Amino acid sequence: MKKIDIAVVDYGMGNLRSVSKALEHVAPNKNVLVTSNPADIENADRIVFPGQGAMPDCIRELDARGLRSSVMHAASNKPFLGICIGLQMLFEHSEEGDAAGLGLFKGNVKRFATVDMHDENGEKLKVPHMGWNQVYQNRNQQSATHALWNNIEDGARFYYVHSYYVQPDDTSIIGGYSEYPKQFTSAIAQDNLFAVQFHPEKSATAGLQMLSNFVNWLP
Image: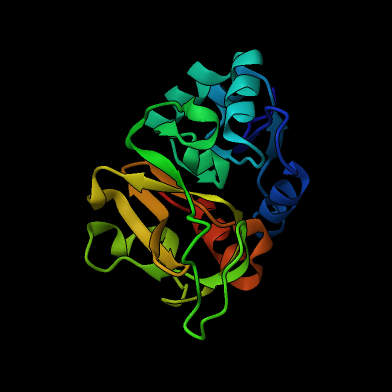
């Protein structure tokens, strides 16, 4: 069987082609496999856990394909990158559909308030938060020097599409944040796991740099 360098978890939610193509672009010599096979996830060297849509639907589809245990096991013992809903599902609970998450991290997924959200010019901000926004590396935490931020300018702009954001109980895992208009967690980091709310595969140079960093990361 051909060695699987990077497995992109396919549970039927999200545009996985853009993720896999971006990974193939930054790592042309690696075998990138989009898969819904638990055995592939167990055998792969690295895991990318993307997702978009409603979290209750994502959890349901993950379970329907029998992928929960293999994803949770991979998140504990190999380089693991969560993207968008792939970040949110790592937490205990989401306000979206009152859904239970995988519970790998203590904390909740909260919806942006729809009232009193205005930018510095007084313009009303829309939900979902969609488009480019700056990401600040959390230099007050150990994760400030995380390898996935290598060669990425602090305050670089990444692409977002979301109405919910994670609120970790343990603030020491926060690896980056953005503002809309208040500060929210945009990245978490702990041991072999890194996860982001934005879409690196849609974030031009900075996003490709992050994916390249992930491919070469040795936690």
